[in-house]
Amino acid sequence: MLVSKNSRQILSLQRDTLKDIVLVALGLFVLVFVSLLIFSSWLAFRINRLKNQTLSVIDESGRFIKNINLSDSSHRDEIGELSRSFSSLLDKLNRYTCFLETVPRMLRHEILNPVNTISMSLQILQQSMSESKADSADSADTLQNIGLTNNAVLQLQLIVSSLTEAASIDQALTHDEVEIFDMAALISEYVNNSQLKHNKAKLHYHGADSGVFVLGNDLRIVQLMDKLKDNALDFAFENTEILFQLDINQGDKAIIRVKNEGQVIPQQRLDSLFQGMMSHRPAAHSGKINAPHLGIGLYVAFQITKFHQGLLKIANRKDKQGVEVVI
Image 1: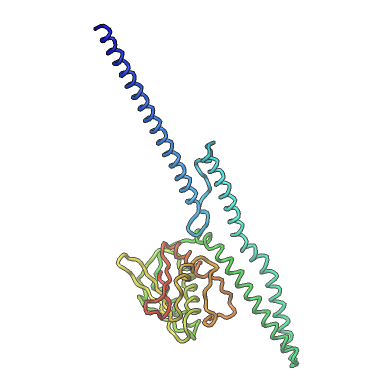
Image 2: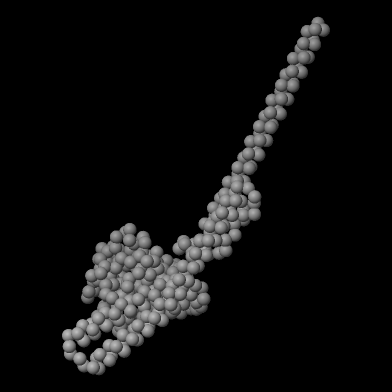
């Protein structure tokens, strides 16, 4: 009886010991699993934070909108090293972007001076030859060549001016003052003045003549209208109407529509019209044959609309008879 009792006690102790070992192992497993889960969640949080911070320094147009300061750059682990690499890369891109933005202004200063000198020299030469009243064929050819050279100089001036305008539009908009003005009166007067300027075109305005007040910069709205008008004139067929329309929707939003009759634009081109340096003007219908078409006008119009907290959309008309711009 004593031996049997001792055996049962020994087996019971072994079971208790085995149970303790299993519980301790299970506890260690749970502790390691929870630790790994917390560690992996922390790593995932840091990686997502690094991704969000990297994306937040660049806006939709690819410009840097704030200083580059990644929070994990001070850590000494692999994510910290990755953050420092991203910071260095973004800083280099920011400096290069700033350099590219200053290039048009430097070009304007460096190119326009000799261009103006060439233009003045050509004008003096053309004037002197006209006053000499030479009727020879060589003189006529020379005058023609001078005229072509003057056109080339004018094109170069327009190119430099367009590049400078596009490069500085964002910075210029940040310094513009806003005030309440009558949008209806502005557009109505603008269309009337544009009709006098383009007497061969058919510009019409539909909407209220006054009483539509908005907060913004009236000079920038005129600049916006200029871009849309030039675009409509270039795409519209001859002797067709270009309609400017102003409406107010139920949410007290001003809606400006510019419609023209002309060729429709393929959808893949519509998606890239606001990127800048993307021109899709048909040569046969260009109202300005000698004017350079860099695709900057719609980019400037898009930035002005964005500054006024608006949306700019270009789509083919539902009747497939032309294009409609909606702001």
